Each structure stands twice: as C-alpha cells, then as structure tokens.
Length: 574
Ligand code: HC0
Ligand code: SF4
Figure 1 (cartoon, rainbow, N blue to C red):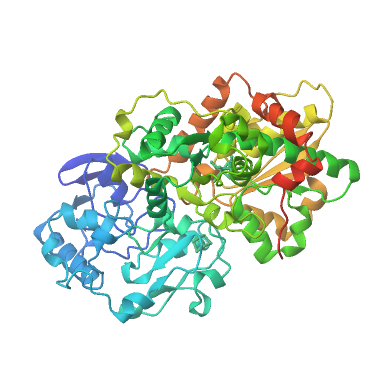
Figure 2 (cartoon, rainbow, N blue to C red):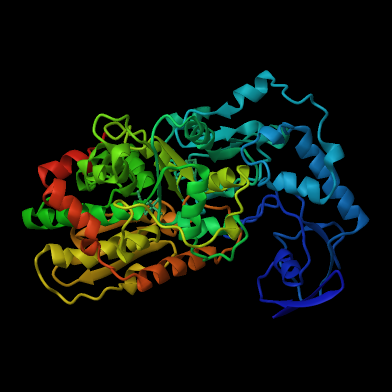
C-alpha cells in the first residue's frame, strides 16, 4: 500500500493508484472534465492539476501515480488561478446557450462553472446569436446521435470509447493541433454517412452537450398535450432499474412501479411493458432456432434485438445477414401489436377497428432504438423513442417528484404481463439465457434444464459460452468489439448454434441512453437488481406468459406461423 497526504489528510491507496484516486479516497474533491473511469487518462482539461512534493510544476492528478510519502495540495491560490484560466479558455469558445441546451443541468462544464462561481467568465455574446460556424458545427443527420462541435471541450472521451478503449468502431478521431484540435469523422462526413452503429456510447461519456441522443421528448410532450390520439408507452427492462439513479436513488433500485405512476402523470393513456414482447420474442426466436437446427441451415443463429449490432452487420458484414434472426426486436413487436393486432381490442373503444392508430412511444436505454424505429419495413410500429435520460428530463420538466412517488403502479393488460426471463433481457447474456429456458419446451422435450445459467452472466467485456443439453453450444458477445473479434476467425461457424450480441458492454443496462454514471461498479449493481427481479418472479420461462399464450390462441396460431411472420418478423438490407 502507498501512504499519501492530501491537503494534510493521511490516506493509503493501492500500488498503481493515481493522485486523483488518493484524493477521492481522502474525501477531497478535485474537479475533472476529461476523466472517466475505465477510459485512459489524457490530462487534456488540466482541471485536476495538483501540487506534489518534490515536483517543480503542478501535475495532473488523473495521470500521476501516487508515490509513497508524497504530500499533495489540491486547492492553492496558484492552482485556482490555473483552473480559472483554463475555464476561461474553454468558455471563450463555448456557446452561451445553456438554457436551450439539451443537457442543461447535467453538463459537467456548467457544474464546474457553478461550483467555482466562474459565471463572470461566460462570454458576453447576446443570447440567441447564431453565427455561421455555430450552424456548421451541428450534425443532425443521424436518427440517433446529434453532434454539436461548438460545444466540444476536446476531452477525447468520445474517440476513446468509440475507438480502441471500448467499441473499436473508430468513427470519431481527433485532427489538428493546438487551437485547431477537434473531433472528426473520416473525411469529416456527417455521422449518417459514416460507419456509426448508433450505439450512443459517445453520448454516455461526453461531459457536455457536444454529443447527445437525437431528442424526441419535446415532440412527445407536444403530442400528449394535443390529445388527438390514444397514447401508449412501453418500458424496456433496463430502464426501470437505471432511471432510479437520475433521481438520486441508490444504484440498483428497481423503480418499475414508481415509473408506471410517473408515466401516467405525464399523460400516457396506457402503460405497457416491453417485457411482454420480450417473452414473445423468445417464442419466435426460439422456434426459429429449432427450425434452423432441424434444417441445418443459417447456423449459428444471431440474435437481432440489438439495433447497434444489426447496424454493424449491415454496414460491415452483409454476408452474415442470413444468420440474423428475422424476429423483430421486442420494441418493434410491441408497437406492431399495439397498433395492428386484434388482440388489443379487448382493451375497448380506444383500440376499436377504424379508430386512429394509437400513438406509440417506447422508453429505452438505447440510442440505436431511435434508428430501429425508422427502419424500412418497420417504420411506423413505434412513433417516438425516449432514452432513459430523456424520460428523466421529461419527468423533471413536469415537476413530478419521482423518488417520492408511491411504488404501486400496475401495467395495463394485456401487453403488460411478463416473466422473469423477459426481465433479464436487459443484461448481457439475458436474451440467450431466456431462450435456453424455453428452447427445450419448444422442442417438445420435458428436460429438467436449470433455470439459471451463470456461465452466460457477467458484465465484463468478452465472450461467454455454455453447452445446453439437447440444443448445443451457445455464445454471448458482450460488446460489439467482442463480436468483431469472434468474427475475425472462422471457428464460430461450427462452434456455436446460437450467438447473442449486444453492442454495448453489459448489454442494455450499459446502453448509450442510460444515466451517465461515473461509478465503475454501477453495471454490476444494475445487473444484480435485474437478476433479483427474475429470481422473485412467479413465472420465469417465456412460454409461461399467459397473455402470450392468449395472443397465439386468438390470433397468431403458433410461433413462426404465417400470421406471426406478418406481424413479428422483418428482413435486412445489405
Ligand atoms: Fe433492450 Fe430489448 S432488452 S434491446 O437490451 O431484446 O434497448 O432494456 O428493450 O427491444 O425487451 C434495449 C433493454 C430492450 C428490445 C427488450 C430486446
Ligand atoms: Fe462511435 Fe457508437 Fe458514437 Fe457511433 S454512436 S460515433 S459507433 S460511439
């Protein structure tokens, strides 16, 4: 262990810890803008400069290893002057339109200015002034991700996460030096024309409003306020856990019922559960797997519910499209059923034939779901997609006291019932585990397969595998980089019968639309919460969902029937 003194406080840290780690362990706050746990330290923002015994110049705490016996000062007059000068440089180039910024209130630069009372440094540009450079810096071409380079503070986190540190997509890099340094795409192309898969990981780490999800929440509020169509909202499995963090609740708090109450207060007429469609996905995708196993073609089957992964295959390996399951994702299935099936007519006049189609909104932990909702052949199933962060913003904008809401909301039914298998979809490996739980049943075999498959669980980047009696070996790629690595060889073709890929590490729980957590252990807490919901669920296999059974009995006949294909399946474009 290393002993350090920070502002006079003794603290011991592990070998290899940085001065920033030591300060945090001592309870001393050092400001940072470009530091993110899990990504390399660039020391680009210079906010974390500290004075260290034995060093002539101030050192960046994020990148300087703690030395035994070192004495560190974090808040001297000289350091404050350095920081103020850096902030002045950043603010001189930053638009002063916080009140109109999508991340107003959640911006780290804004927080830094407020904490230090540096408001006098904001440039005195008249509010509302838009110059040509400002307009040019905006890129709204992607259906999922908006860029505004005028807000960039050059921290480098977007390029790190998109590049070798996590996703290995290399869509964003840095060009230029000194004052001209800026994030760029290849040939400076707009995002829509790049190989961006819309995973949104760059929006998750951006400390300011330079990279954000394409916002839908304004239109959702307007549409709800107009009361022209009956409105329906569905909630993804990962959102109900992570949204708690937006309102100061302990990470891992499950807020499903509180969330249902909040959505009703926002004005949605019907609150449904994406998990219903997740169970349905398992029936369709599981049957598809068994059909492919029988025919001996199209194996391994690749899951298709992650739109970032589907985008990646279309953009990079169209030769693999025949492996993708044709089953729509739960989001899209849910919208299709809410809009076009006779099943929902049991809900009454709001869904009667001949009435205007319901207005369908989904709440997802994912930015690529916005893109998915616009896919050819599926466009119209879902009208607007909100990320978890956008929904939190909407709730705040209406003054709804989320954390104080009673925890007793109930989903509307049908389209509200689900099993534990659907809940675990939100975690990496969950879709595969859910499929395994049902595959034996669909095969007509009454195997006593275990319910829980530990080998398929875990949030660490990489590939997980399990061999399922009667089915074969299945694999889970946790993060798009893991899938890329697997596909570099040819071994996967014979090794596996089915492969789950989630583009974001941790699965949807780590999705690009989730709260911007700075706690490296947060994914584990979210995952533990999801598995606990499953463990407590009265039904834990998708085929046990009574409403799914009723849907087949009343309308779809059986999984993979022609009626099911019309409503629940899709195709892909190379
Ligand atoms: Fe997911 Fe989904 S589990 S992709 O990860 O399959 O976004 O949470 O809603 O559609 O159900 C995301 C999460 C979903 C879908 C489901 C799947
Ligand atoms: Fe890279 Fe994903 Fe951001 Fe696209 S959305 S630029 S692929 S991190």
